Image (cartoon, rainbow over the protein chains, first blue to last red):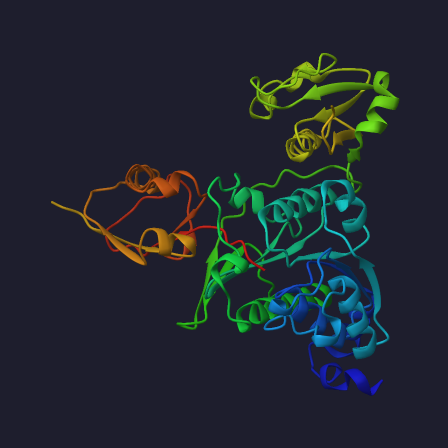
Length: 332
Length: 79
């Protein structure tokens, strides 16, 4: 096929590389400033299947950097508009559209379908969710994020390499501004996404040296690119390829409450009380795991679903539980 | 003898602290430097950050010498 001749004639890449791309699947989380170039170049290169996850609609202020969209796609869902662009660019690529945000409830079932995950999100909640879920699924993911004129790129959880949470165990309690707050030159997410797409092609085809165990930081005003290696920590991996953490709705819990040991991981001063729950704050869970010996299935609950998910992931790492449930909403 | 360490900040910390700081204190290792910085810059108690010594992300025990290239790296948010 002449479409790919310019890359298949590369010595290291060859037809073998092209076949590997064709067989591969990648989930792209966010079709914004970073996601657009990732999607565009992976599709052009002939990736087999691309999952596109984004719940936002195209706005005029996006067009300065989100190059898959134009005046005619204003107001359309980004995942759908990106898929339409890709179908025209390269109809041999299968696109799978998720026109909603990645959240606790759907993350595991979406990400488990793909070989690799590319984080093109613009917030920490999504990034930590991708990291936790990919760790549980033993899946590598490619991180990219920007701040004003600077960007960071890295590969996490590749064959046991460190996770994002190992570098940044706690979320910031001070708001770190995103593009909407502090502004951005369109080329910066463009470059960032192109670097992530490059790393993705390298991981799939096995050529070159991927950015594993290193954080790349670059600044487009100075054009300084610096890679900071991080020591390989002993990863806590799961013994199974299946993610043992499952989302549970409040309704699903209530319908079968007797099946579960309900564990409330909120801090002790948080109300209302759940009389049927055992209370172990998330901050103490690692010290009190022996209190969770039970014949029942364990379901974690918190205020909104973030801490219950973290608690289930923490417990999953011990390998002692086949199935853990995180209630992803309020249980009132 | 007064020791002097030069620290470079990235991301939001560049705006909230400085691009570069000279610390005129004697600090044995990364742990001491983190304590010193967090005492003097409240923002560092709220935002997680990595410390790179001579362009390698370092642990708390990594020793410091005055000629070290020290970088403070917070996570970035945008996409």
